[in-house]
Length: 418
Image (cartoon, rainbow, N blue to C red):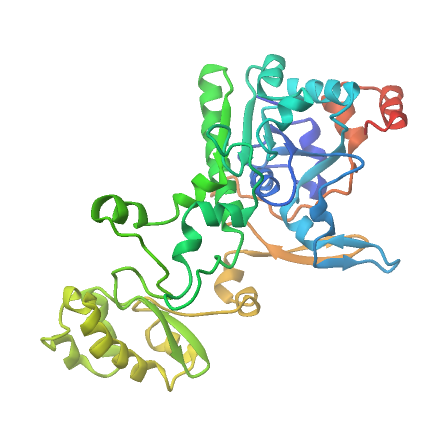
């Protein structure tokens, strides 16, 4: 599959040379987050990923803040770097015949192509799935879009908020006495990314067995809908339309945010075991046998919870700090400090898991970004690679994968194709 172990993988930006997906070649024709994050996760796992951008209209996430600054005044987006590490950079104008020809050449040597255009865009350019599959029947073609490759909405433009809105999540988030609130991160993009990676790996496994590639079709709307927990069955079984609940769970109690002396904690000691432990840890063991709140079912009752349980938790937490509460109960029951990103970055558990990595950019200095949550025992992920400059590795990629010589590459550059 793909290139052999002595090939272009040894020249990856940042020195990536090992990994479970070593030898898998990925063509990344994506921008912003959903597509780039997908191919980045594959790159962290060892795949050779080639980021292909339009020479006159590169990924506009390159202009997103925050930005690293060099002594000469040049800037490089930390946002872009985080989602495009461990990739080769190539520019290619797919509106030209020469650009199409180069992509077809690359496809013959590739295992995966990832794109996140609106459905039909690649077909309009003349390099859609059916065209590229003819060049390489083993190709796994992963398409991430707002609404998927089929259905009445397929051609609609979409952003993350579009998926949160049409996937049901936005209507459920926030507080019941206020308008719905979007989830505080781009969950539509990120969930589609994760499903795209899962689909791509499954398709690669099938290709290994059959020699045939396939289309992997992932929709942001679909991805968000799958994150709505019990909302669908609440509607289809009981006819209930879930609305915003603030920090509460639809039925599990206690299971939410509680104030303390210097902020907030999450407490989820709702089972009988955890409730008994909590009563002991906070000096009121007799409450575990209180006949009004001595079972999970009783504590789930909204009236009992509001009258007996919530006030009790406030007395346990209000005069203690987040650190004190974690020291008292964090090792025994589900009680966690609600931490801001500054606290998370400096968290010892995050450090122990290598989830903040330092990457040195020669001209710009050090960038600290999130690492990889995938921990493999014998082929660990390698998240410390560099993101490429626009078209930075064109010569290397075109020589190694498209079999072009220096004269041909120079001619493409002269025409503005790369």
